Image (cartoon, rainbow, N blue to C red; front, side):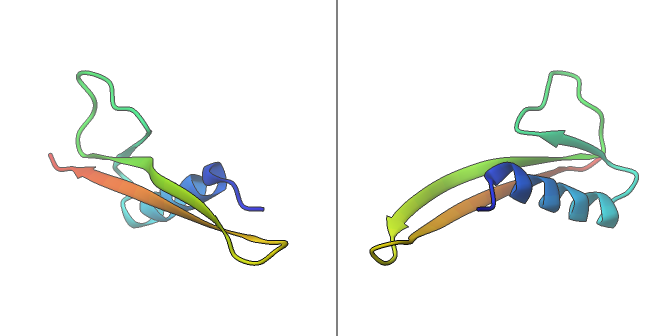
Length: 68
């Protein structure tokens, strides 16, 4: 099963590819953070029965871009 960490890692890698000079943050931005940068965080997650033996899992990813 794919974990939320795997999803966040993949999204962050795509953002780094698109914005290679930006600083990347995960789930938390500290005071006096570097700009330009972006924040990748987990959003709402749901899980529901799909069939008798499987579940459907949905996860949202929130990306915040901090301009210079």
